[in-house]
Amino acid sequence: MHWLDPFVSFIWWVVLAINKPIGNLGWSMIILAALIRLVFWPLNTAQFKAFLKMQKIAPMLKRVQERFKDDKQKQQQETMALYKEQGVNPFAGCWPMLVQYPVIISVYYVVLNHKTQFANQNWMWIGSAFSKAISSPSLFGTHVFAASLALPDLFLILVYALSMYLSVRYVSMPATDPQQAQMQRSMAIFSPLMLGFLGWRYHWPSAMVLYWCCYNIFTMAQQFYLLRRYHQPLALIDSEHVITESVSGGNATGKAASRKALPSSNGAAQPSQPRAARSSRSKRKNKKGN
Image (cartoon, rainbow, N blue to C red; front, top):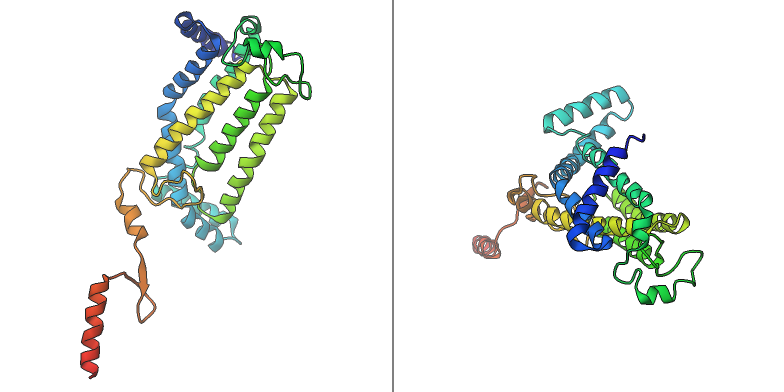
């Protein structure tokens, strides 16, 4: 007995329960993806907030690393002290993903263990009269349009790869430095390419790719919502903004950080002043000079 068997059995039972009124395993897999995302909503929100806190202290952490770069033991002590002072748990962003991992993998085995049921099912273009009519030609050994949800569909794999690119590139956590931003841009390219290659190479069933693709789309929707709520400015089309808003959702921190500063005569930064005030002050100085 595999340790995942209880998860696989339960998820298949949920799929059958959804499919009973729906009557289509393709739409049932999409609804399953939405339900699982809703169940793990609190965990994903906690994970987002944990990453948010880590990014907020990233500049302080970098200064500690630079200050004690020649003393690794002292660097570790100061890092842990910084975590404690700021109330940050560096592992808080990892455990929500570990909890979800068995469910994510179980869907793969659900489709593999019940290929017979998925072989008689269609969804949108998959398994339609059009796809069945042209299912014999294939590109690099994979059908462009699958004849059923049990067969690989190259077009759906490409859609899944595109969703991965959009997720990593535009709806990921904002970067806090140029190096991290460059890494995100690289991942946005290489991750979809790698997943697309694996899907084509190992002939992933369409039902499994459909679930993962929709799950990814629902993930982007939640990430968009969290960015709108906890991050300012919105990093929807720019993943290089630094976090400026507190986790509690207030705008005071972000607004204060965004105010422009003007250099004073001694080099210190001064808050910007209204144009009218600067103009009247300039006139008074001119009168004194005359």
